[in-house]
Length: 209
Image 1: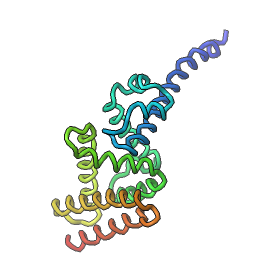
Image 2 (image 1 turned 30 degrees about the vertical axis):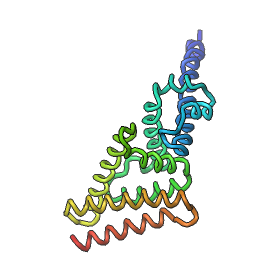
Image 3 (image 1 turned 60 degrees about the vertical axis):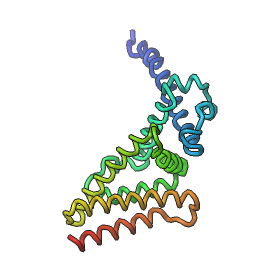
Image 4 (image 1 turned 120 degrees about the horizontal axis):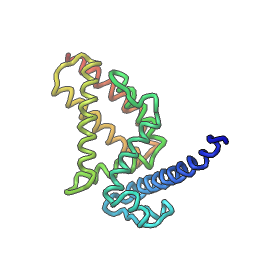
């Protein structure tokens, strides 16, 4: 008896439900990105998310537990999508990280929905009790620290406060350009402007080193 053939249908029966579950979760996450990106977290309704995902309100809760749970999962999904867009740079370290930032900005010009969801939710997260507050605070702190370290490595500047300030300025410019680009995509060349800003910051830090 060919045990391989006998076992195959059973394995497929296990894989198919898992694949369907993954597909359904991804459909909900994409729908949440659309709804929360368009209406914000507070005004975005789970019913609308469910409708866009092609399932019931109860189905959404089955997969994510709550609206807050869905938001957190969606933000993590967004981060995963950002890495997936340029997989060869998923774990970039050192000076190459600055180019990685520019590449990510370029990739984002093809993902308006992702950029809009991030911009809307990050702005909304500063309000009292917002469930995404800790996520955005931690993400910003981590990015600031990494950029500051890379700027120091590239420029030879060892002034920690100046490096942190420069990193904060670069993040502010990137976030601000995203908003301007969302309002008028044809007027804003995000990759070019971010690249120029990076060059100017590095040049200034080197001169002050």
